[in-house]
Length: 91
Image (cartoon, rainbow, N blue to C red; front, side):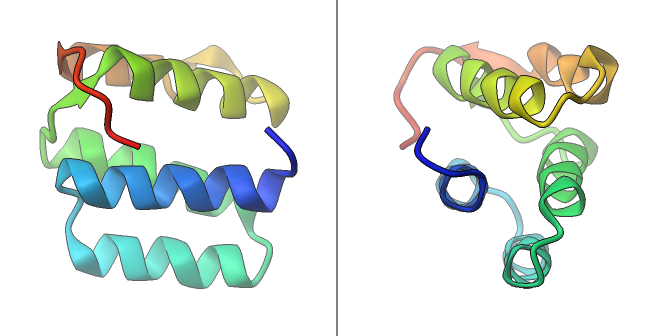
């Protein structure tokens, strides 16, 4: 991952591809534009979970890498593992 802004943007776009609602994508993008990386990250993972959007293992590992890089507690994103359905690439 080159920089945090780029990584969170990739996360948002991958979540869009997986089916995250456009309103949530736009909100996360606005947060990212304002350099609110933690809030953008939280918006993506929370809304994916809230709307039971299927993810794949690769996406989950990408979430983990970003979360670790941001020094977030594992509990802030580990719940997404329940949404893993297959191993198709999202981004």
